[in-house]
Image (cartoon, rainbow, N blue to C red; front, side, top):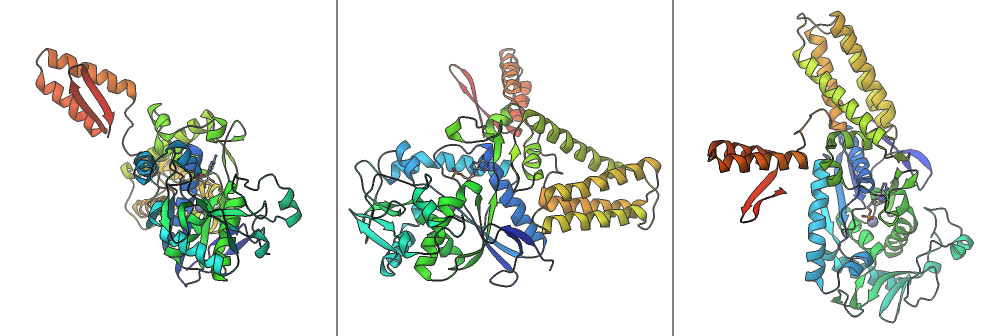
Length: 465
Ligand code: AMP
Ligand code: ZN
């Protein structure tokens, strides 16, 4: 099995992956907070996770990929008051939309998806363990992690304790705690908020405990890889380590992988800055989701990526070029023969691509190897210097690349809003002249593109399936 190396935020070095259980990589990826639609910046993070998981699988590892869904936290509670039913009614459409977005971007589903609200018991147990081991205390019905009890705190983010005290980024909330650095594990019930009756009292979990408790529940007390965006390093992941290692006394995670941000006009794309794009809005502008996947996957996960219309156009152009190339390969008529020079170049490209991917997911270098092969194959096709055996190898290598990239299948042409409106108008006209066959044909064509029609007294309404 080839060695896969990844940049580990904990060691600040590119470390070879040696899983706790040989041959089996257990990975936990911080998932979405479902209080709104994900934006394309959030989705970059899941494309990066997808590239990582696919690369590990390609290297021959069995991978268990767990992702949480944060369906209770401060933001959700601010948006939806009431009990669990109200919270679920509020978050369910965003959760569904999130998984639709993942599918649209061809992101493979995690093996286990765990919603926080279904794992309260595990979180409560973890807080109890922390209390028993002297790392947590109760105050006014809430529980806090006592940072002073865990001298390793700040190891991941490389904080010094003096800096931490002065640090503006320490979460401050309205609850009373012994030390300003301490963070909430469990929050006492407040009027109008969702709460659970538990041995800790009536209340709800803090955000950080959700991930530690669910990661350990599904992957064990010590596992291999934990991912997030760079903004998760502190305080979220620092707190996860404190909670998990405080509760078990064992190392929590071997390799911490953090993906860089997607930027808009050189600023992080973030809902709070109002500079976000949602995937569904981009699709209605006619942008090809495969091009978006390509764009998000093509930059190295540790470099920031600017989201610009030029970058989207470039990616669209590149992906179209790849589809044309695959068509040319399948339609090419060349002499029969055993593989020769082009096949050898293809094997070199295969090695170049996967050496780059196995070395800290260097997608730009991997893509350089791919485009070298495309160039060489185009020259060979043009000059008829290749034979069937060569093209078989080229196709095989391209398919191998696509195990990671997943951009070679063009997929369905997106149907634009204006096309839908026009087709509905044509159908209305067909119905008016009693041309039922034509009307049916149009309805079926729209359904094929995932558009459902409903005829009402006020005319025809439509929605995307
Ligand atoms: P949230 O749904 O807010 O919990 O965020 C989900 C994930 O998206 C987190 O792991 C963040 O680190 C990540 N994220 C948020 N904004 C961006 C961005 N602009 N670019 C890349 N990742 C982001
Ligand atoms: Zn998390």
